[in-house]
Length: 180
Image (cartoon, rainbow, N blue to C red):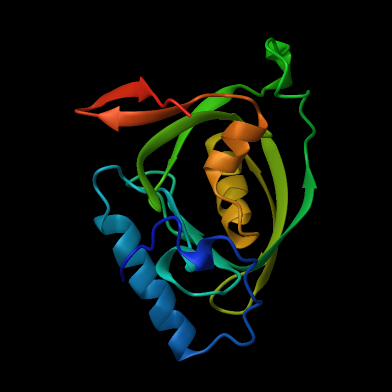
């Protein structure tokens, strides 16, 4: 599958719910996994269906090379741990929230620091049709929030700018501040 890039309209529109889990959807997920695992520069850790041109409420995540792939169909955030206002310069360290560098396969070579919640509780269906409710923390919580943003038609650069942070362009392996 080919990863679509900004400014493709599918990335800025809210996706549609998955109507049924069938062989066609299984093939889509299998192809998404292959696509995600083939991304090496940078390595991908999550992929939303709209990033491969499909307006479907579906994302996959694989937080490390050895991790199993988590398939989230029609995901819904049930709760999210609040963090202090990320536009403030100093956040209390004990919040568990710190700005992490994020990038996106749909916006190659662009990076930015974003404050995300350290914990998110998600309801989703897997490929077998089983419903799950699960709390994700740390890096997995960041991935979930990033992918959920995709399903809402939001890309990470919007979050960076909302939080009044800088974007960086990768040039020869170095990050240079982007002049906007």
